Figure 1 (cartoon, rainbow, N blue to C red):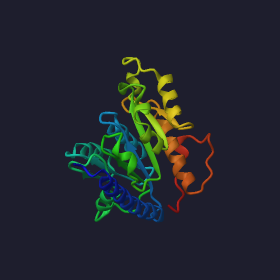
Figure 2 (cartoon, rainbow, N blue to C red; figure 1 turned 120 degrees about the vertical axis):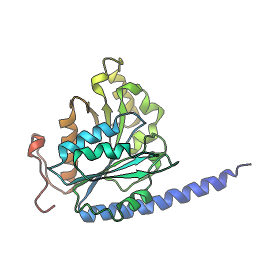
Figure 3 (cartoon, rainbow, N blue to C red; figure 1 turned 90 degrees about the horizontal axis):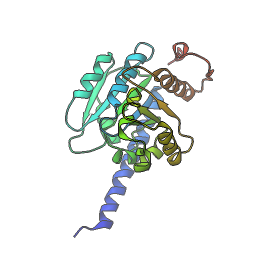
Figure 4 (spheres, rainbow, N blue to C red; figure 1 turned 45 degrees about the horizontal axis):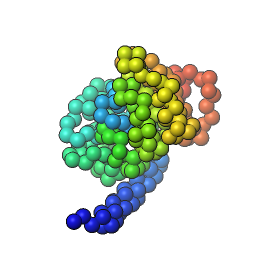
Length: 241
């Protein structure tokens, strides 16, 4: 017979320990001047494709790196390394999410130098990652047009824990008869005011607006005022970074 109170107590302790480590990581990142973005989605939503394009476009303008979580393979890390930025795989085995301790261990001995941006790609899962803080500044939740419009209603916790949503594979929207208005309404029903971006990593549509959002978040974190009309190419970190 399962002792439910005991299971709940263990889970509370695990989450508490994770929160303590996450706070330490967040303090460490801020001291180093590193802005951390985590990506969460279900499997196949296009996290890696979007992140590869993101890294390629930011590389050269910013000091960027990525940590990638996966159950078993290093396929995603090898793919992201094509962008030319430092990438490190976190293999979780049977664990269906990343935890702060995994991020902490991955950073040990990883001599990539000062970073402006660190991306953390979580394991494909819309349930468990919602409960685990990784010390990030910004959490992006992704859903693809191939998954249907009701994803936010089915997984409200992950959408509530995120700072912005990204609808991916928008070049396939017409083919799969994706109802964008319904998806937007569902997102807003779960998380009113949530910023939502439509992108296609394959065609590049929507990438400039999404990347402008990221860089403005980064600059505002440093206390800099940003003109909404400044084009992406004109946005740079201060020389002190």
